[in-house]
Length: 211
Image 1 (cartoon, one colour):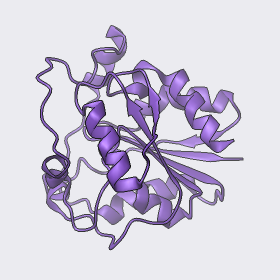
Image 2 (tube, rainbow, N blue to C red):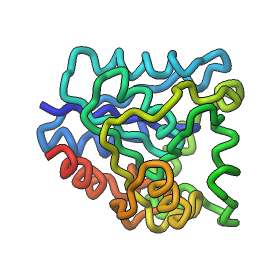
Image 3 (cartoon, rainbow, N blue to C red):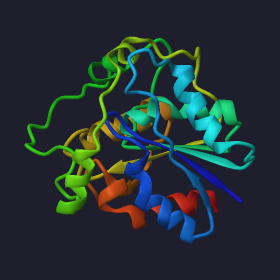
């Protein structure tokens, strides 16, 4: 059985994946979506990887999925778990020595000016819950260079969120092409938080990758 290791983005927790987990479990997959210790200012890259590895346990067939800033952890976790696939959902694909804070300038990101860059297409009650569950993010981790000397050779997929008001789809496609060599990434018609606005559709895409 494939286990999906689902990694949340900045300010989120594992709860952000609960609807995708439900949809994947209904399809017969195992899932984990731990809270990373990114709310601790003393947290390290290794601490965050360990949080995922502990939840995955002895599972041997693993697909690692990261949303937004969770993408920074995808290659680290995938390497640790010898995963068969790494997936970035509107993800921050890292480069060796780059910090999370530098990533945005390096890829040419600019604010879209949206009053609601994250939850504009998420149902009202769900977006209220998401905002109530927001967690602080370690400033130290954001300033610490990504620790690997190279990206792993594990196959990768990128899912572009085509209605994204936080990371423009053009930027996402550029990141997929220049950092992963993917010139034809997958797409989902959603805002930045497809895991909340289009969870069933997103789960279907992920399941398709596993199959």
